[in-house]
Length: 131
Image (cartoon, rainbow, N blue to C red; front, side, top):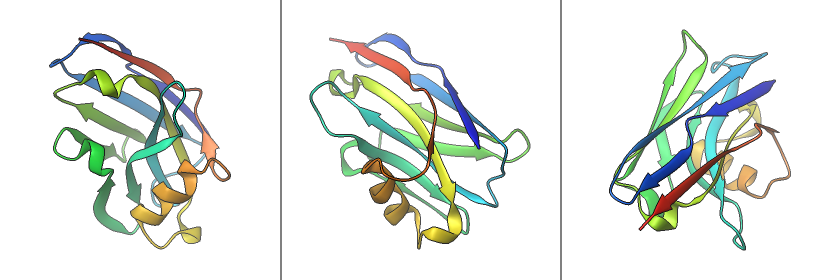
């Protein structure tokens, strides 16, 4: 599968962004998918993920209440809406996917892929939040 992210940019703190990721070569019925980020000098973090057979998304504690993930099966696109943005959200945001059958749920998928060993990854989109 291939993944292409878009929507990053430079935004002031308190503002909002919507990131998009288009999945090709597969469908959400076959793949778990999610958003990950990596800031300079920090480990990759799974911020929000979806499991194919579970409608409950996973959110990292650091983003709960501010990030919202959604999926459009018609266009094979997932979105990540962020509001309000904080300077600590500055990072490269990646979209990643893997076959759902390897994972028991969104939390396990997000945790496993954050390790960076598995899955297919997009090229990333930079989000910079100014204070």
